[in-house]
Length: 467
Image (cartoon, rainbow, N blue to C red; front, side, top):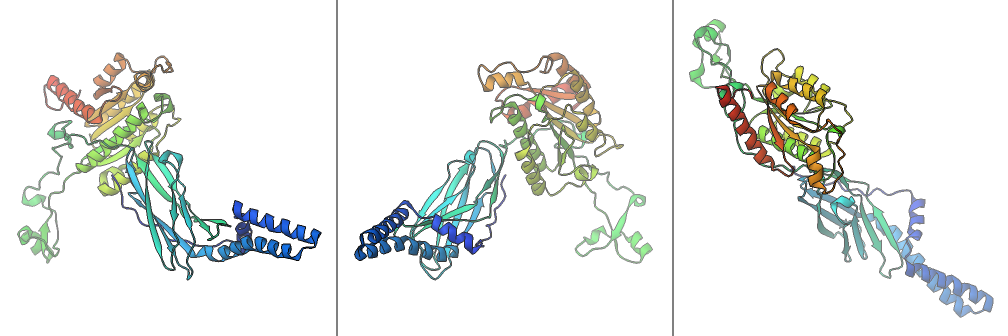
């Protein structure tokens, strides 16, 4: 998913004059320094030898780079630049295009210009462009591409402009202070539309709706608004209140879902695009976007207890605009990193006191877990007590580490990786457990979760029963 990028405001604020003048002379090229040195040497020789003609030559050689530096000093602040990202939010391993625009706002033409933009090394080589002489009021536009396999937020800029005089005596670098941020979000995989539970749970294909108003005594009318259908006018309430009253429409109860991401440093081993942790982050991003597209009021929860869009019952019940919520969650997942949290108790507290407390089931719970010990497995088993359905994607770091880097040493502590006993504990507590093999596509795992859920429901004797 990507968001449109706005152009950066132009900026051309000069620094102190004394520092600028010093910078102008420090920008002399090798040719300019050679001319200056030759002129000084000629002047000294003319003084020693008493040759006035040699003194004139020395003055000419020394004055040329000085004049070029002064001219360049007076004109270099009359060039403005801007940058535009397209898009400003891009998926990992995808390309974004950066558009640069330089404009000459002075009354004098410029010399040869070299344009350079600073980019982090993970985005590729530093782009450089050579611009020909630019007429007064003229503009030039160039573009380059950036790409990163690693998610994150990367600053672009500041833009640097190197100006040279026609003789190549002096080069001055102009730096703009404005920067842009390119957000590289996890790769999102399209998930198939499946029904992880039955009609009665309030999510999936069959959503729970508020009970229809039946009977005249159950009507809760409201005042008439322009555009209301006249057939919805409730005449008895109209006569009682003395103004037009209409029946309220049935309000749908929005489906709720919590996506839990385990970020504990002790739960994942290895790093890079093919690691278990990156798969879990990408899986969480795919799940969040999939559920938002289907009308869920989704929230992202981590083991630290941090909740996005925000914590509390209001976040899930109100449901922010889906595009805004999706962008906020993707931005969060773009920079999420390993936490030093020792366990999952903070996430459990958030689920226990989250939306729907005291109201029965709170909706769908989808979790992505790394390695756990027996204590954390017991905490996970208690998490799904208030969920209509709970799906856990479990990743064994030992398998992923050996698959990601052949010959990788066995660094997973004993008792941390998943075994059949812990998987059985989760299944008996109500979780639909999906072990994730290295490199498995998220879409296939999502479909497998639906199949396992359906098989468990059939075994229980009712569609959508707890696993």
